[in-house]
Length: 408
Image (tube, rainbow, N blue to C red; front, side, top):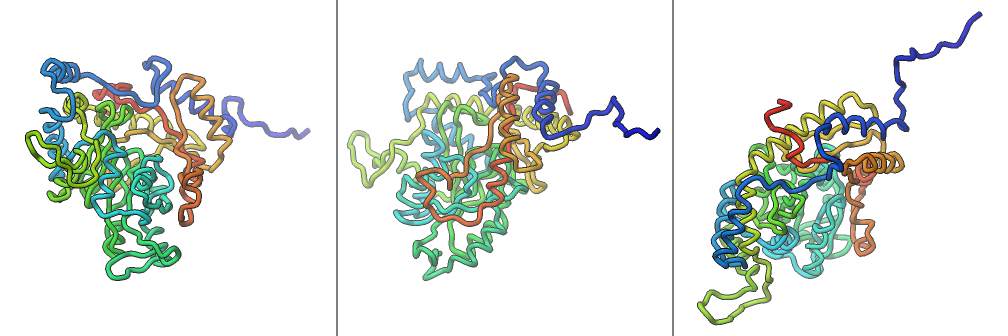
């Protein structure tokens, strides 16, 4: 008598419903020695942080004037290859000043990815300008130059040297690519678009300190760029950010604007325009100097962790580990899993099960175009960004989770 065939009992048929448990098992194996719960990302203090901060306290130089402020600016410029760095109180403030430096004004439009942290759009709004949302590409997780170019061909034209949105009549002043999770956007074609349409290129490099685009540090291609040193970034100053630029005049203006536009004088309070109280305090800069000394080690460890994840998830059906694009070397600030299918229910099931197991996992940001304060802003087709929103999961990424001497 014929009987139905059954799979060998030693084999396990993988289904989507099994995926949350399989992800937990992989994280268990990769992070077996880590103390639970494992946060998504936390700062690592293994160098001169205490000594430098204590020196600030002992000498009473704790505010925005002090030797560590100047030193951090010099060290950042040297590390990134930018001619100048100007430190600020946070990355959002740095980006706001960058946009002002390139001429963004009230009612101008600024092209930004819909898939980014809300600070990118907020920095535009602080200048009473209008975020104009554009799509991302899966290859980089960042702004898609090809789709942007085709979109501008349809809705924009250059009039008297200014790019104008023919649908709204407003100037489009700048493009702000954000290097998502440390993975560089493809900047060459984007620069070509900026040249064609007379747009300023301002890099939101908040997440990409230590990342390279074709051998050059991110944040050095545009007119200026913003970095962030928030507590969850690759290095931290507690709170803090910086402006990078190769333009000496822009750097001088950035420093002036972030110091409440006060003219240099021994005692007089003379201010020549509306400025910002955005200078980084010496205490924070001291922390940053110590952190920057350790950045090469942090990056080596983060890439070691990324390699471990890449190998471990290679045979897990239904999900893949996101790897840097071929033209880039990423800092792997936050490691990324991508579901094969845009399944919000499955994504959330993985988030719930991994967090219940003690692993700090997070979804990506909600598309900014769907937030109530930005839902009426202009936007192009955002189908790829929408897919990524439903498929992306961040997994633990703190550099101290691995020893850089292992997993080579």
